[in-house]
Image (cartoon, rainbow, N blue to C red; front, side, top):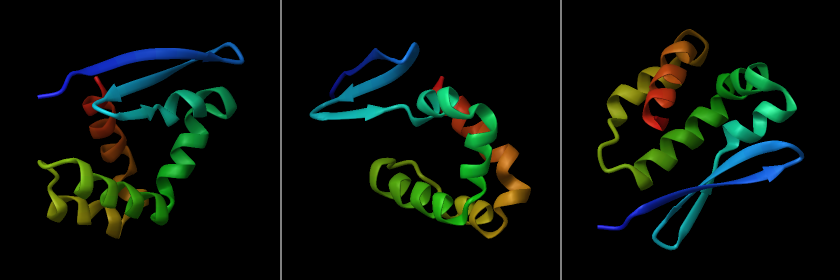
Length: 94
């Protein structure tokens, strides 16, 4: 079992979280987006069908507990389910 390590870098006065797991590093796009448009930028990106498809594929590859059938609901109607999906992603981040 590998350990995760969180660290931050400072980019133009904004703290950006980096998660290191095994040989991979993951950078927090949410932290970066806050600097350049805040929640509006994130919400607009999450409304995009291509974004949801990307998240679904990423989860299939990296999350053994991913529930594809439940995720299909979000893909079919991204605008209606945006709020719920954002809450689930935020809860997962904690």
